[in-house]
Length: 89
Image (cartoon, rainbow, N blue to C red; front, top):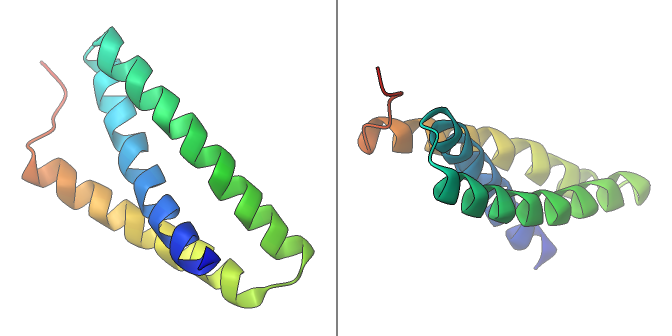
């Protein structure tokens, strides 16, 4: 079950990171703060699970962390294109 939780958290982390940068750049205080709050919570759990995996030498969990982090970046960039998230000019 922890593998699934970590996979979801890693994908969510990267998506929230993209959104936080976009909202911050757009100077949208409310969205930046809400996204930043969610990002901090997700980061905390992601880090806790990742560090736990390293301490316990759980190579599968480490692999899930890395693979789903990369998948999360891919999804975040595709979502950015799909939602036409671009900096204001």
